[in-house]
Length: 284
Image (tube, rainbow, N blue to C red; front, side):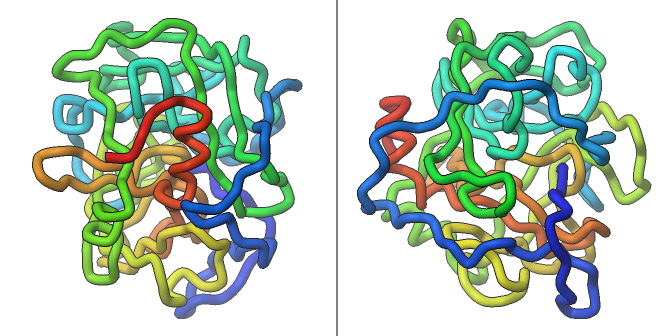
């Protein structure tokens, strides 16, 4: 996970990243700006995108068929960012994964376990949308949508995750519940070039100060034996199952530089109206 180094705070004795703005995102029912942003520009010089999940296990896209890799065309074999397939044509990711990127530079890969493989499905981006009001100087509104150039072929290793309705959110995103985060980011060993898809299950809470001061519409990944997402996992899914469906509750946003818990995730339910307006994909 790329963790933007805007500011620091001390939380339970650990170096952690703070929210850089007290601005909060609108609620699920709030009015939305008429237009979202289309990203254009040159590639930014990120300093810590080396790429897995910390203290997790190797998994498979058969278990996480909604998991995709989001990378510039020059970084296909590296751990840049992850994303969540929400339909055959649309991917949910973090805004900081695509800020400054052009549609011609970005690629989405689905149905892969290992970043070095030539299997799976590869698509370019036809449009990239940032949530209105997103600012590179803030950790707020860290959510974006990518429309791929042609729909993915759905199957056992490529399937969308469902978006949580308010009813499902009230069941899955509460203090005391757990969710699973997956990706190709750094591991506890600090490996510089991990390639295998990994996952870890962590306790979560939408409230409280476990993760310090943070923007509205975020989920805190509470401490659990140092389990965490890390650099290279950004934008990837925080998901849980309910009634036989995978639901994407969050997208990896930021967290402590040590990657030992207290990661922060953009809360997908807080952006349900915007997602539907842009993609036509409704909550379930």
